[in-house]
Length: 236
Image (cartoon, rainbow, N blue to C red):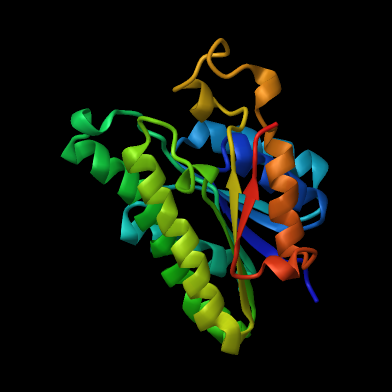
């Protein structure tokens, strides 16, 4: 069998980039997806050094259904199949309930929930035809214990947990697996945009590689007992 093909969103930095690198190191063909072309280009250069598979990147806003479908179409045109989808992109707008606006809600739900849903839907016919596929959604431990100010963020990420259960149930008959990884605070630019080190010190956060390793283990079949479940990864 040829090398597996993995689409990774949020691949320009943080958990997405760490996951893409680990998959490349294991010989996957990797499709890097994000909104900032330069970050994707930098990540692509890194992956080509460490991996043996092919690498392509697509600058796209997957919160737009047409762009999300375009990502999958380009992957299919390049590789002829899609084996894994890692939904690692996200935003974390922080605001107390009384200052939560319509724009903030739309941003959180379109990027954190609609985008992953659009990609899952776009991948589904190919998974069905292949009779295989794996979806790993990156949610947050905050869906169970939301930090104050994450009214919109936690709720939008909770959709990922629900998507995972649905994909596992509907995918059972066609060989599709699904997992949800729910980390606590992770040392990423997204975290630091909300919390400086004097509020959440570096020793109290996970590293992106720790989360990426769990994602890769799900793809590789090493976490089969967690199929259809949310995997909590508390911060230290």
